[in-house]
Length: 358
Image (cartoon, rainbow, N blue to C red; front, side, top):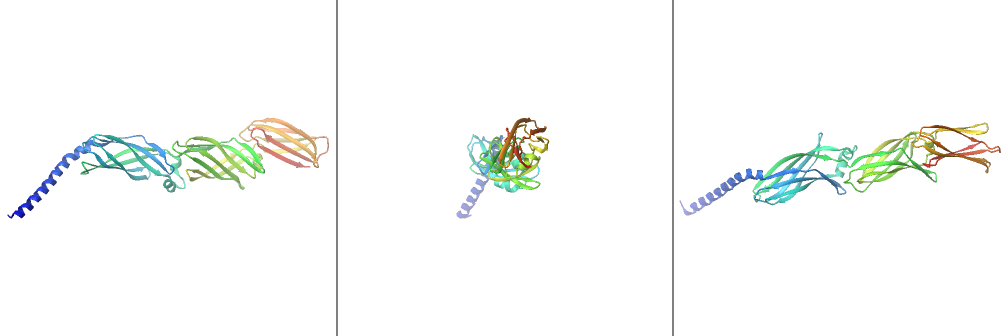
């Protein structure tokens, strides 16, 4: 055999020997590495908000009990509930040195724009909690990148909806500017602490006869907010005399995302079914307080002859919620042709005025 052939055979032998040695090392190290590198704990989820995304920070404790550094660590995760896959992604987590353990806050990022687009028109996860089954796949390199490990872990993650709930109360206050009435009603909005900013409420007020006004308001996010909604009404006098259902239809805008809402609000008239009549020398009136508040009434009757004031009568009266009330006002002995009767609740500011031309 020639020298050249001998050298070639030697090189081949050396290469094969090196490969065999490496394989033997890997075969020996691999089972040990799988014992020494593991996810020891998946902790309780913390939730943050960056203005665009809700970030579920899942603390993952990874222990490296081996003699080599772990490199190129990545976690691929899939979140799903009982009906469908919710989100999947891969995050690259860096390196853990030999003999150390590290708690890595795995960021499970939920983009609100994508969630909004995916769940319209019902926006279920904006209002409802859920339990997601989380499947984590840990991938890493060990022994200078010669060993690649991959293992799976399972846990449950609780989803806390941004909006816990809202409510609209029955009390009110009333003010009048020019010919427009402003009725303020209690409003609460309960949102998760991780949110910040302001929510806006806007929409229309609708009766059987159509739109009668607008509704608007705002609320601080990240707390249990107690405040008011403002009903702005041009056609409001019928509300003083007639109880009825009002439909609030509009948007609750949270973090720049308008979420449609429709709410039936029962309006209780403070002077429901008001009637009055002239009986002998007096005006007899009756009504029922169907509002949610007792009335502290100031009742005023002014009598005119032409544009000349003839007489003025007034009285105070307390009316309980649901109480039917009858009262009377004495007529002046002087001649008159016009009566102006005003019923005003001192507490809420609600009032009704009737002009009677004889």
